[in-house]
Amino acid sequence: MRRAAVAVATTAMAVSLAACGSAKESDGGSDSSDSAAKKGDDIKVGLLLPENQTARYEKFDKPMIEKKVKELTNNKGEVVYANAKQDASLQNQQVDTMVTNKVDVMIIDAVDYKAIAGSVKKAHDAGIKVVAFDRLAEGPIDAYTSFDNVTVGKTQGEALLKALGGKAKDSQIVMMNGSSTDPNAAQFKEGAHSVLDGKVKIGREYDTKEWKPENANANMEAAISALGKDKIDGVYSANDGMAGGSITALKRAGIADIPVTGQDAELAGVQRIVTGEQYMSVFKSYPKEAETAAEMAVALAKGESLDSIANDKVDSATTKGVPAVIVPVVSLTKDNIKETVIKDGFYTIDEICTDKYKAACDKIGLK
Image (tube, rainbow, N blue to C red; front, side, top):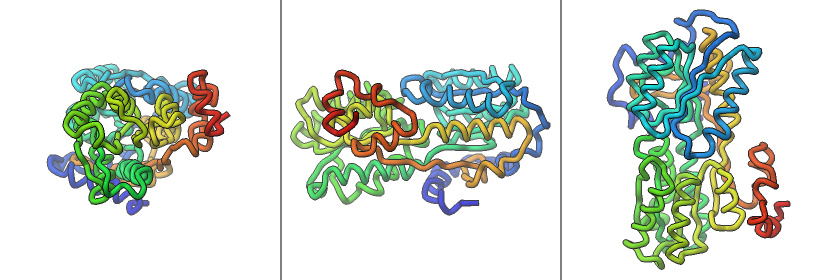
């Protein structure tokens, strides 16, 4: 097992989530196949995604998981989909419905990683395996796949320092972190702070409710009012949606040409990178993550071992030694758009370089 390679990403998680696991649950992820009955290709996979505001969920994750499940089951497997629209209570109800409808396995990207624990246990008690997707949900989960979230934050922080250059030590930034209900947000923040602390002044910092761009916009307006529009030299934004909301507030205040980070390589974010409004994003291979989640789900539904799929293990507060796959990330700037999102088929040049962005694309050689 490659435990050491994910120590940075998982140690803080294990410490911060180490309070409430029961002895009964603590070994829930130790064996992926001991209690599952062998099944054929005719399986039913419940897919529960957290919201539909971030482009990745509907554009990438859902269709990619559906495609991979079909591929792995000779077109016999069925994916039952539910989107919680950022409502933790609704997501718990969706899990209950899938338990009632007797799906064979669930892939869950939790709205609230703690609030979902009871529903995960209901699924577990009903003999339904659970793959935690992108966010490490609490409860007796059986597998997990995500990105190295601490490294994501470090990548963003390093890019921001690079953009500020020699002026970093005299610069003041605003930090726009993600939602406090998302364990990934805490890890992004941890990684960013490990790079930024002591290297730049953090004037204001926010945990942005529900990751919503409009909430980031309001937070940025508050920061501008508190610090002064001439006293903000850069913005750490944990994702592209919040970067967009922050940039709108900055532009309204007449603040331009300061570096803003992001994550997810959303089309609007890539286009802002092309124009220079946003400095960078973090490119994450959603195909790899989605395909891995599907592979884990199908194997679990069929009662097969995850040994050939998962090469890591992670701990949550309630489940220790969860088989995991941690997918690497890349810093996306205007210099490597072709080598990342275009090469991987996320977008075409025509999708990025519409009439509004053609001149900016031409300027950076994106044509």
